[in-house]
Length: 79
Image 1 (tube, rainbow, N blue to C red):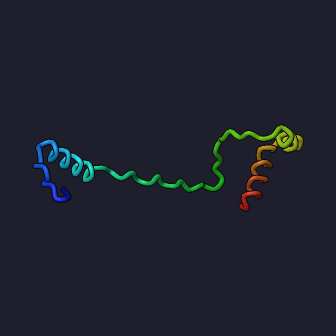
Image 2 (cartoon, rainbow, N blue to C red):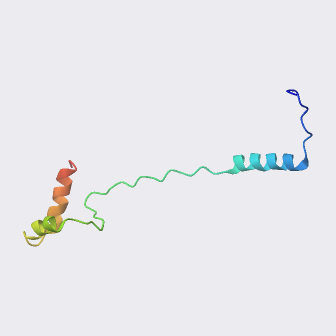
Image 3 (cartoon, helix red, strand yellow):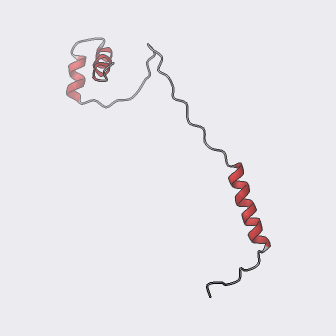
């Protein structure tokens, strides 16, 4: 029983194989998304959740608190 004869190919088998081969040949590979390069001096608006006490600390210094937060984050990032 190990050497059973193969069943004859039918039209649907050939069609399925042809469709699979066509799909393999025509499927586009997704291009990698190009990494955007940060331009110095350009800022991006984001939403960031900060603990209230941390926010109060930076705001206590008066105007420019966002710049001070940015400077602290830059220092923490090693930039």
